[in-house]
Image (cartoon, rainbow, N blue to C red; front, side):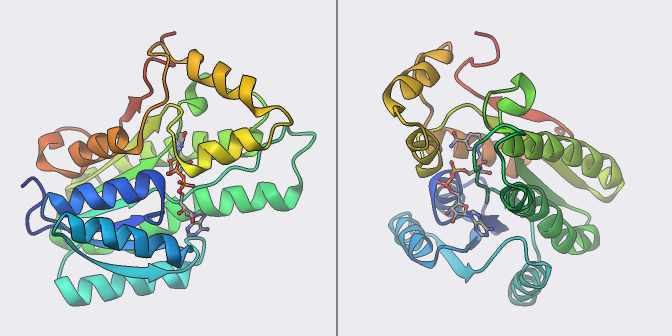
Length: 253
Ligand SMILES: NC(=O)c1ccc[n+]([C@@H]2O[C@H](COP(=O)([O-])OP(=O)(O)OC[C@H]3O[C@@H](n4cnc5c(N)ncnc54)[C@H](O)[C@@H]3O)[C@@H](O)[C@H]2O)c1
């Protein structure tokens, strides 16, 4: 077991990549604190963890709320005496160019994606500093590197997450804390399905996206979870400040 005795907090654990990572981390021996605003989604993740004979706790709230972040981390540290892994997978996109994005949607995308990365790192780092160890895994996107059409707030937010990841890796490298981003390609999750559904005619958009990958398919959440497990575990002990691309060859195609 690659995370035996470790404690992890995963935001966005109620669906998709966060859920698959929670199940995999639990199967690998970690206690997983699962965070999401979708309480019903979290219950499905709990069922997945139980099937993996794993252990975890459920925390329902908005990742953009600083008090929520602090209270969850305090609860976990009080209970377990440590926090080894933080994975910030909560995210969403609204679609739109800079002309068609509503300012409130722009703010909401930044609050969840960038704020949710910042505030949870801010809550977790003091304990990781005390331990002199920890792994923070953020969620970027291949689109932050390649660019993409019609999703300006989301892509700008993911670019900010890459910059924040590198900055935190430098700020805390002397404290034994590693910070890395994952940049997935298009992964078959509810978020991806919602993004296609925004189009008047989704089918050709879905096919173009699928074929944009060198591998001519979408990824699945479990494939991203495996990358997260690598970054969470000691297998990546010399890796910090990187962007691990898991994109089926999107960037090279
Ligand atoms: N699916 C993809 O193609 C893809 C590609 C690149 C990056 N990503 C990133 O991976 C991460 C996970 O995406 P996914 O595809 O699994 O999406 P998903 O929609 O399946 O899951 C995201 C989860 O985040 C939760 N969430 C959203 N906003 C929240 C908030 N303010 N507070 C608490 N919880 C909140 C949702 O309730 C949901 O359970 C996201 O950061 C996303 O941007 C996804």
